[in-house]
Image (cartoon, rainbow, N blue to C red; front, side):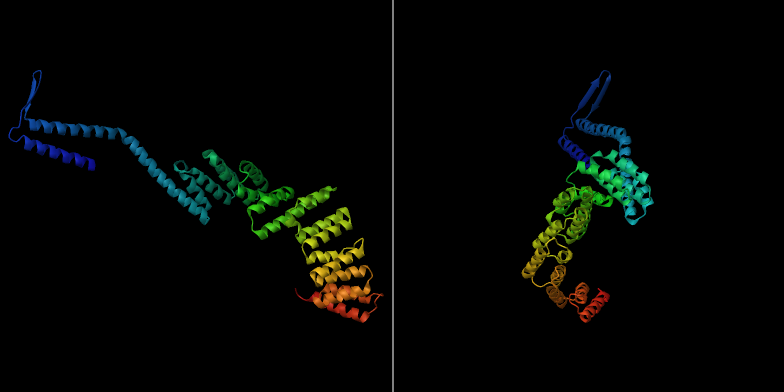
Length: 398
């Protein structure tokens, strides 16, 4: 519009200028062709040329607009359709978030051909279909998403794995995640999902291979990761123990040192060694080494119950700990048990009484009561007192 106003203003200026210039002598123009002739003043001729030129330009523009009209109408309709598709997509996503899954699925797919990025619609529709239990339809949407945008294979695969896991299709999720792991070996979320699948399927050896990287990248909370590691490493040790030979020792050596120091895992490993190898000396060496590296009351208690092939050496080791770590009710109880096995009745009584004096426990009272009631000591009255004290401790709430 501004352009046409400028042209009109220019025309007015030209006409007025021509009138002013040719006011005294308007000039004369004669056009003749054959028998046809045209006579007019120069001013009128100039104005006619300018107006004619403008009319011709306007006519050409009108013809061009008329020729382009169908395409313009089609483009306008497409824009309106795209705008409507955008609104439907937003509504579908909102319905999905609000739990109206059937309405969401319909809105997301209604004008899918007019959506700017149909990948988002197909992935969201797959989630909506899953919530309705339509697993086959879900897979169809995921397939359509891949056909629409093959470059987004990771995004589609992650969505597929999440939905398969949520639907309890663990084996299918494993196949999906294994493929994704090959495509993107450094993808953190794929690694996290794969660890979850191995955990659910109890594929302990494969899970153990992933755990160092999982811990390095901090993909789980520390407390949750410790539980996963304990379960996985325990499962690996069980599998290795059943294989026999030195498989158990090899499996143990592959476990990180930090995890080897966990009491639950270490005690389980010791149980397996006792069960499958039946070598008390190896068990004793493992426990002593672990306690020397890091003090742990549970291991000390286990050491006190362990029947060593060399009881005197066992007693010397425990008394060395007493000098290094000081008085501990658990260590004193362990010393009392070792002395009982060595038939060192006086030392056993002293250690057990010291343990009870430091922190009374039902186990220490029972050990001392059995010792006092035996024929070697023969203090039945005191034995009864400790039996009663141990019973009261057993009945006390934790």
